[in-house]
Image (cartoon, rainbow, N blue to C red; front, side, top):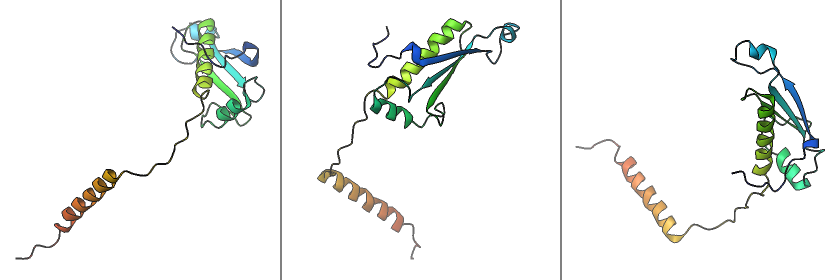
Length: 136
Protein backbone atom coordinates (compact mmCIF):
# COMPACT_ATOMS: atom_id res chain seq x y z
CA UNK A 1 0.00 0.00 0.00
CA UNK A 2 1.58 3.29 -1.12
CA UNK A 3 1.57 6.29 1.18
CA UNK A 4 0.41 9.69 0.01
CA UNK A 5 3.26 12.09 -0.71
CA UNK A 6 3.40 15.63 0.64
CA UNK A 7 4.71 16.98 -2.67
CA UNK A 8 3.42 14.90 -5.58
CA UNK A 9 5.31 15.31 -8.86
CA UNK A 10 3.42 16.94 -11.72
CA UNK A 11 3.76 14.80 -14.86
CA UNK A 12 4.05 17.93 -17.00
CA UNK A 13 7.31 18.85 -15.25
CA UNK A 14 8.93 15.51 -16.11
CA UNK A 15 10.51 14.75 -19.48
CA UNK A 16 10.61 11.13 -20.60
CA UNK A 17 12.64 9.62 -23.43
CA UNK A 18 12.67 5.98 -24.45
CA UNK A 19 16.07 4.35 -25.01
CA UNK A 20 17.31 0.84 -25.58
CA UNK A 21 18.01 -1.06 -22.40
CA UNK A 22 21.43 -2.48 -21.62
CA UNK A 23 22.30 -5.99 -20.58
CA UNK A 24 20.94 -9.41 -21.35
CA UNK A 25 17.61 -9.84 -23.05
CA UNK A 26 18.23 -11.70 -26.27
CA UNK A 27 17.21 -10.24 -29.60
CA UNK A 28 14.46 -8.18 -27.97
CA UNK A 29 16.97 -5.85 -26.30
CA UNK A 30 18.31 -4.79 -29.70
CA UNK A 31 14.90 -4.04 -31.21
CA UNK A 32 12.75 -2.47 -28.51
CA UNK A 33 13.36 0.83 -26.67
CA UNK A 34 11.95 -0.22 -23.33
CA UNK A 35 14.26 1.70 -20.98
CA UNK A 36 13.24 5.18 -19.84
CA UNK A 37 15.37 8.28 -19.23
CA UNK A 38 13.56 10.63 -16.86
CA UNK A 39 14.69 14.26 -16.66
CA UNK A 40 13.34 16.53 -13.91
CA UNK A 41 14.45 20.17 -13.84
CA UNK A 42 14.54 21.02 -10.15
CA UNK A 43 14.82 24.81 -10.59
CA UNK A 44 11.89 25.01 -13.03
CA UNK A 45 9.62 22.77 -10.96
CA UNK A 46 6.65 23.89 -8.86
CA UNK A 47 8.19 22.55 -5.65
CA UNK A 48 8.62 24.92 -2.69
CA UNK A 49 11.89 26.86 -2.69
CA UNK A 50 13.32 25.26 0.47
CA UNK A 51 12.65 21.80 -0.97
CA UNK A 52 14.45 22.77 -4.18
CA UNK A 53 17.46 23.90 -2.16
CA UNK A 54 17.56 20.65 -0.20
CA UNK A 55 17.34 18.65 -3.45
CA UNK A 56 20.14 20.64 -5.06
CA UNK A 57 22.34 20.28 -1.96
CA UNK A 58 22.13 16.47 -2.12
CA UNK A 59 25.45 14.84 -2.92
CA UNK A 60 23.89 12.79 -5.71
CA UNK A 61 25.63 12.02 -8.99
CA UNK A 62 22.25 11.90 -10.76
CA UNK A 63 21.85 15.67 -10.36
CA UNK A 64 23.66 17.63 -13.08
CA UNK A 65 25.43 20.99 -12.73
CA UNK A 66 22.35 22.66 -14.25
CA UNK A 67 20.10 21.21 -11.53
CA UNK A 68 18.46 18.48 -13.59
CA UNK A 69 17.79 15.12 -11.93
CA UNK A 70 18.33 12.28 -14.43
CA UNK A 71 17.02 8.79 -13.67
CA UNK A 72 17.34 5.73 -15.88
CA UNK A 73 14.82 2.92 -15.45
CA UNK A 74 15.45 -0.33 -17.30
CA UNK A 75 14.54 -3.03 -14.82
CA UNK A 76 11.27 -4.09 -16.45
CA UNK A 77 10.49 -5.38 -19.92
CA UNK A 78 7.83 -2.83 -20.79
CA UNK A 79 8.11 0.91 -21.24
CA UNK A 80 5.07 1.56 -19.05
CA UNK A 81 6.51 -0.38 -16.12
CA UNK A 82 9.85 1.42 -16.45
CA UNK A 83 8.06 4.77 -16.67
CA UNK A 84 6.14 4.12 -13.44
CA UNK A 85 9.32 2.80 -11.78
CA UNK A 86 11.18 6.00 -12.72
CA UNK A 87 8.33 8.17 -11.40
CA UNK A 88 8.26 6.21 -8.13
CA UNK A 89 12.02 6.62 -7.74
CA UNK A 90 11.75 10.36 -8.43
CA UNK A 91 8.99 10.64 -5.85
CA UNK A 92 11.19 8.74 -3.39
CA UNK A 93 14.04 11.21 -3.86
CA UNK A 94 11.69 14.14 -3.33
CA UNK A 95 10.08 12.52 -0.27
CA UNK A 96 13.53 11.86 1.23
CA UNK A 97 14.16 15.61 1.51
CA UNK A 98 10.54 16.65 2.19
CA UNK A 99 11.03 16.81 5.95
CA UNK A 100 13.80 19.17 7.05
CA UNK A 101 16.63 17.56 9.02
CA UNK A 102 16.39 17.94 12.76
CA UNK A 103 18.99 20.24 14.22
CA UNK A 104 21.12 18.73 16.95
CA UNK A 105 20.84 20.46 20.27
CA UNK A 106 24.21 20.51 21.97
CA UNK A 107 24.27 18.89 25.41
CA UNK A 108 26.96 18.39 28.01
CA UNK A 109 28.12 14.90 28.93
CA UNK A 110 26.69 13.62 32.20
CA UNK A 111 28.79 13.17 35.30
CA UNK A 112 28.61 9.38 34.93
CA UNK A 113 29.75 9.56 31.32
CA UNK A 114 32.76 11.64 32.34
CA UNK A 115 33.63 9.16 35.10
CA UNK A 116 33.37 6.18 32.71
CA UNK A 117 35.58 7.94 30.17
CA UNK A 118 38.24 8.75 32.77
CA UNK A 119 38.10 5.19 34.15
CA UNK A 120 38.63 3.82 30.65
CA UNK A 121 41.58 6.16 30.13
CA UNK A 122 43.22 5.09 33.39
CA UNK A 123 42.74 1.40 32.55
CA UNK A 124 44.33 1.96 29.14
CA UNK A 125 47.18 3.82 30.82
CA UNK A 126 47.78 0.86 33.16
CA UNK A 127 47.90 -1.54 30.20
CA UNK A 128 50.37 0.60 28.31
CA UNK A 129 52.62 1.28 31.31
CA UNK A 130 52.86 -2.47 32.02
CA UNK A 131 54.38 -3.02 28.56
CA UNK A 132 57.70 -1.51 29.64
CA UNK A 133 60.98 -3.23 30.37
CA UNK A 134 60.80 -5.85 33.13
CA UNK A 135 63.23 -5.30 36.03
CA UNK A 136 64.56 -8.39 37.77
